[in-house]
Each structure stands twice: as C-alpha cells, then as structure tokens.
Image 1 (cartoon, rainbow, N blue to C red):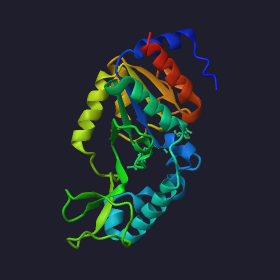
Image 2 (cartoon, helix red, strand yellow):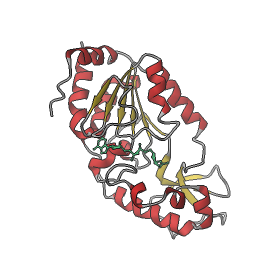
Image 3 (spheres, protein in one colour):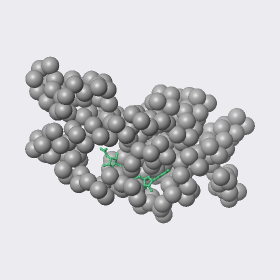
Image 4 (cartoon, helix red, strand yellow):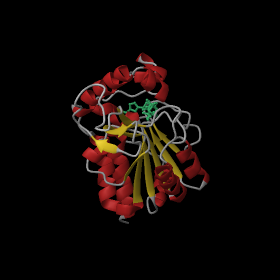
Length: 251
Ligand code: OAD
C-alpha cells in the first residue's frame, strides 16, 4: 500500500527516526497470523467473559476450565506463523540495534519467532507456566502433561500470564517506562490502548516529546492525541513505514 504521508508527517517521522525507537504492540499485530484479538471484530472478549477466564478468582474456582481455554489458545498460536508486521519490526531491530525496543502486550511469542530479541513481554507468555505454590518457579512448558497441569511439588501450575487484578512485573515495567521516556519515535501498533499500564506508555512518550505514530485499521482512544494515525493493518503499513525510518536513519 502507499501510506501517502503529508510532507510534514514524513519530515517529522524522519527526524524522529534518528533517535530511540520504541514499538508497543497489541493483539492486532498478530491478527494477520489468524490469532484472535480481544476487542476487535473477532475479539475473544466478545465471546468469552474475562472474569471467567483471566482472573485469579476464576482460576481458583475452576482451574480446569481456565486451562482448557488457554490450551485451546495455545493450539491456535502453535499453528500460527509470524506475519509481515512481526518481520518488519525484526528488520528495524536488525538495522538500529539497541536504539530499538519492542514492548508487547501479547503473550503469543510471535515477535520472538520472527527473530526479535529486544522484546519486553508485559503480560507474560502463554508457553510458560508458573507454580502456584512456589511462585518464583517459572518454566517453559510447550507440552502440558495433563489438564490442569501440576508442579512436581504437587501444587497447580498456572499460565505465566498477568490476569486482570494482578500487577505487572515491576522490573519489566520500569524498563518499559524508561524506554518510553527516552523514545524519539514511538509506534503504537494493533492495540486498543484501553488496558493500563501499557496504554500509559504512549502518553508518557508523547509528554516527553516523542513523535507518536499509530497503526490500526480502527480509530482508538489514542487516535485524537497521536501525531500520525494510519488506518491500515500492521502488515499493510509497516513495510513502507519501516522503509522510511531506515532510509532516514542512513541519511
Ligand atoms: P485488543 O483486542 O483490545 O485490541 C486490538 C486492536 O488491534 C484493535 O484496536 C483492532 O482494531 C486492532 N487490529 C485488528 N487487526 C489489526 C491488524 N491487522 N493490524 C493492526 N491492528 C489491528 O488487544 P490489546 O490492545 O492487545 O491482556 O489488549 C490489551 C490486553 O487486553 C491484552 O494484552 C490482553 C487483553 O485482556 C492479557 O492477556 C493479560
């Protein structure tokens, strides 16, 4: 597609490309890999109640139902491949190295499967489990022995995902806030931007003077405040956007 940026937008984007670049992604970046979003047209939260599946209370009340739902989602994600959007962000990382930071709300691991290394997973990872007895015990567990799975200590294992009502890892959050504070260019890709604290990051970057560009086929709560809002999918917009950024970096 042709982004048809105004001359002013392109100038600002090119200027910002010389500094630190942060991308915040949400479920929308994986939509073109056929992983359902939460609040989009195919959104999971239109079909399921988060209160029944994504809270510590739901897990305590019915761990089997919660695990069956996560196991179903694991199956969808295992069959998915990273798409053009994921690959473009890896291309950006390869070109600018530690000037780039990816912050994702996604738990699907598709950014890492595209090769991206500098990823902060704010909401956890669906392929990891955490022991509900020994809370520090987190393990990569792609195959589940049974549902619901148990730790060798006898306690139940849970998905290593941040549920509603839980706090994010403070160390990760500090790194995400530091990246947002130092960003010259902040890309907001495929998120409805309604879940905090992730949704606070672009606002913070904006307040610190970053150029904010949003990619989303639908307007969001951020649209009125960002500098540039591209009504396109990640796979449509990112190839050209990343071309412009990389062209500007090498000038
Ligand atoms: P949402 O489902 O709330 O938002 C997805 C956004 O992606 C919507 O604004 C869509 O319009 C947009 N979208 C759809 N297809 C797209 C495409 N091909 N390219 C770009 N954008 C597209 O997902 P998140 O904002 O990620 O929490 O949701 C935030 C959190 O709420 C999730 O991390 C999850 C959920 O409860 C946990 O899992 C802990």
